[in-house]
Length: 490
Image 1 (cartoon, rainbow, N blue to C red):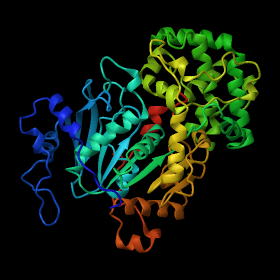
Image 2: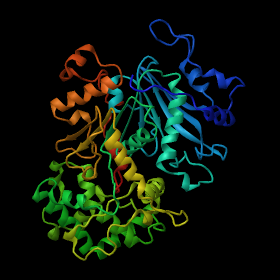
Image 3: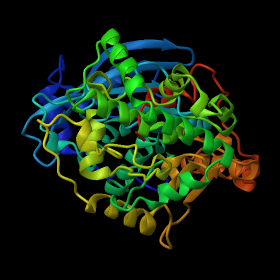
Image 4: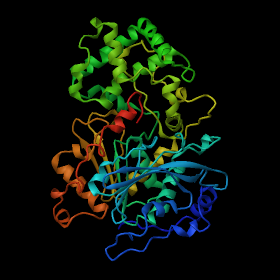
C-alpha cells in the first residue's frame, strides 16, 4: 500500500461531536474499527449502518436498496473554515455505496452536486469496491448559512475530502482511490496536491488545467482543427446565422422566457443571455457530441428557416442556460472559475463583428453581491506540483473534447503516472474507450493501485479487465454529461 493513514484529525471529533444529531455520549469512541474474522470480513453482529452513524458528525438522510450493495445518503458536519474550525459548521452531503469493508474504496467527486441515487464510477466497477461520493461545498444544500464565499476555494474543498476520508478510513481500511470527471477530475487532482498521503491512486477524467488564465490560444488552435472542415463549416455557419438573425430569434427568445418564467437579472439582459448561449454553440457541440452527429447540423445555414437555427442552438447550448434560473445552481462553479480555476476566452474569428460582448467572463454569471478577485497563483501551483510530484496519477482525455486543449501534463518527477487520449472521444471519455493496449494498461494500473490486481494481471497487464460485471443502471456513463449539458462548464 503506497500511502498509509497518518492519523485521525482531532478536530473531526471536536466538530463532529458538537454538530452530531442524536449522537450518544460515547460516540467519539464508537468509530473504532470493528473486530474482524481471520478472513478480514466485518463481524456479522455489527451492522455497517451502525458503524457509519457512530462516526461523530455523521447522520443518515435515507437508505436506498440496491442489489448487492447498501446505499446511504448522509450528512456530515464540516467546518466552514478548516483553518479556524471554531468559526461555524455546515452539513455536507455524502453518499456511500457499500459493498464490503474488505474491498477497496473509491472516493468520487463531481465537483458539483452529489447524486442521491445509487451509481458507480468506472474505477469502482474496475476494482469491484465501495464508493464514497461527496457534494462539493457551497452547492446547495451543502452550503453554509450565511455563506462566506471567501471560504470556497480548492484547499477548503480538499480539506472537506480529507476529513471524510479520515473518518471513513477507520471502517474502510483497504486501499483508496480518488476519481472524478471534468471539474471532478480537477477536484481529485487538488485533493492529491494538498493531501498526497491520503490516496493510493488518482484517476482523473477530462480534467482541464488552465495554468495561465489570460493565455487561451490552445483553444483557438483546437477549434481550428478539430473534426473535419465540413463539420466545422456547418457549426460555424449556424452560429454566425444565429447572430445575423438576432432580431427575430430574440423575439422568439423573449416569448420562450415569458412562457417558462425566465429572468435575466444576473447576466444583465436578455440580449446578453442570448449571445452567451450562441457563443457556446461550437464549443458545446464538441464537448457533448461526436463527429458523426454533424449530420444533424444544417448544412446551409443562410437558407435554413429560423426554427432550424433556433432548434440547433437550443439542442446543443440550451436557451435556459444563462437565465437566472439556469445559473443559480452553478453560482459556486462560476465563482471558482473567476477566483482560481480560470475560464476559456476563445476568438471565433468566423463571427466577424457580429458579437457585442465576446466571451463573457465568470463575473457576468455571479450575482454582484458576491465579491470576486482572481488569484493567478492557484493553478500554477497545482500544475507545477503534478509535473514534479505525480505518483499513481492517471489522466484520461477525449481527442475531440475542447477542455482537453489545456490539460495536465507529466514532468520528469512523475512516477507510475499516465496521460491517455480516447480517439474521437468527447467530454464523456473513459478508460473503456481507449485503444485495446492502453485500455488494458490503464485498467491494470487501477487494479494495482487498489491492491486487487490478480496474479495473472500482475504478470501480464494485457489480461486486465474490470472485476465487476457491467450494470446498466449502476454504471450509466452518460449521466454526468447530461448534468453538465447547457453551458460552457467543465
